[in-house]
Length: 384
Picture (spheres, rainbow, N blue to C red):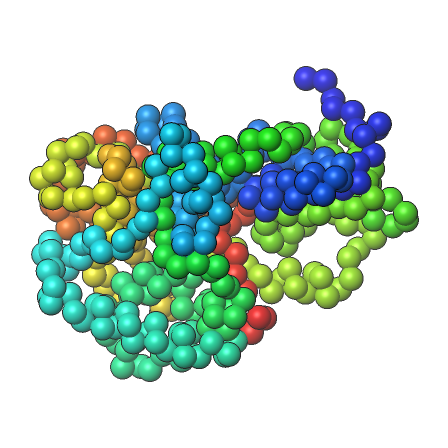
């Protein structure tokens, strides 16, 4: 494949990364009349917003799935305007299943779970000015609650010792309310929304030389010379030193990078026969929770558990999320170990009878993806 030549381009700005942020920055600059080159290391756009249609034969969001801040979400609004292409709908968050072993709990049998959930959420929200590990604010009595391990994984992707109430309450704001879904996939929606944004794929930024009048970005396909550079890669990539800055950035920049970590997250997706959803009366986008024993890792509050979203967007696939330290440990064992864990987890609720419904599985691993090195970004407690 011939090298791309940037020698004669000399744009006003080079944008590194064609995820949602990079595409947005490029589109805005073009609208303002600037000349821009957006480069992307992968062979596609979208970053962690990517929908695959080949693995299961249905839209499969391998990363971003929920349209957060739904009432004001510009992607959701775009999808609604193109209703001939997209089906956008609100997540009513009222369809869920809770299991204690093989027993399905029906309200008020699951009241203990939701009472604990509300109690810890109240602690988190009422301590929004405290930049300390959330676990330090939770009374011992609540930590000993039999549903504690389950609630920990419902309230976020991070273990409680790696969550800062300040970060969640001050640094993170949704413009709107609620969540929504796109039947065709979040990644598909984003790609269509930014279909007119030009991107040079398979172009890896190795070094940014920013001393002098112009900025030079050294890539595997040549050098780009520009007046300015916008870097939109993940903090995981920045912390790993994948892009060299010459000269070094100010020390405070590196300290800021180091204060932000990428949450470990594994999505195990199962394709199940339609009869499973019919036999158990499962409707679209049903959330699935299971009581987990507080089987901690190295005596720390890292429960070995998973939450599910069943019958995603009316399809026959279901998501199961493995989060925190347990996700890191499972990643080291390989994808099959994660699949086996989820299958056994479901057998513990439905019995060995569950196997007759199973078709295939896939794991989206953002932890080991060299272009993200993690899933969700967030501040390390004490660094907010």
